[in-house]
Length: 318
Ligand code: NAD
Ligand code: UDP
Ligand code: UDP
Image (cartoon, rainbow, N blue to C red; front, side, top):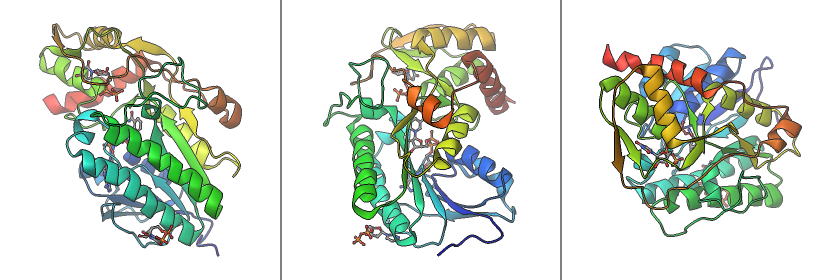
């Protein structure tokens, strides 16, 4: 049975008040969909969706996806989960519950509605990778009992659940492995490296460099990532993923700090701090599959994306 009226889809976005979820919602509304945003506001912020209050095709529901949810929709994007190490380690049991119980509830909902469901997985499923760059076939190198495990293993278990619901119940699934993504609407106290460095530079504070800064990441601008999300969700049913979406241009964390200092014009010094336990030493996506199956690749260079992000964070200093 279809629940589409006038050709409009009703789309559930969990974690919709967060950084990525709120940008996704903007894009869905722009193309004419109806959106139900479900969020418990743990790391998300209502200010990310304030501009949508009163929008005739937008609705917000405060709800924790660890509990069952009975609504009627045509598609589900499951993004609910704290993403910054500082936040997901704050209440690690809740992080695992969100990934695992949350996935079970959202998959149960998708099963009842027989609707397509998308999972925001992560490059963290590769752990501290011994294969570089990381293709989707790589099974990863993950510590099951460390301080990052609540997130890494939670997301790995969620992937398992998605593929078992697909095999066992014929559910249409779309699993994306997101590599470090940044941009406007990251919370100023989010704790991830891009927002930390920019906030510190703009405040004239020291830049907190964990370790010697030789560890690497590949940074994707949010708009490129959301393009990839939509291409994957609208791809044929046999394209299930997991599929890497990220920017394959790799930077050391020290290079990132230098670029932030150059673009902000700040004179901050580097303050070296110990490297957190299990911090991955390198990370870079192999995006061959995204190119071939989705015709997707990122367009925004780090310098360009950082300038837009810096402009956004300046509002906290006005
Ligand atoms: P975010 O913290 O800004 O957003 C997560 C949202 O989920 C928040 O609004 C939060 O309040 C909500 N949430 C958390 N637990 C919930 C629960 N139990 N029930 C309902 N809502 C809950 O982070 P983000 O960067 O926007 O990340 C979104 C998704 O993408 C997450 O699943 C994350 O794991 C994944 N991801 C992000 C990145 C990245 O670099 N941004 C990388 C890999 C994966
Ligand atoms: N569920 C939900 N909304 C629904 C249907 C199911 O939140 O519309 C939850 C429900 O809590 C259930 C879980 O999803 O425990 C898994 O559902 P499934 O049908 O796979 O399993 P079962 O109901 O047999 O536990
Ligand atoms: N990092 C840092 N200073 C900070 C925050 C993070 O040097 O203030 C480092 C962190 O140790 C890691 C990298 O930057 O090596 C990316 O960290 P982030 O928390 O953004 O994401 P991760 O990829 O580790 O999940």
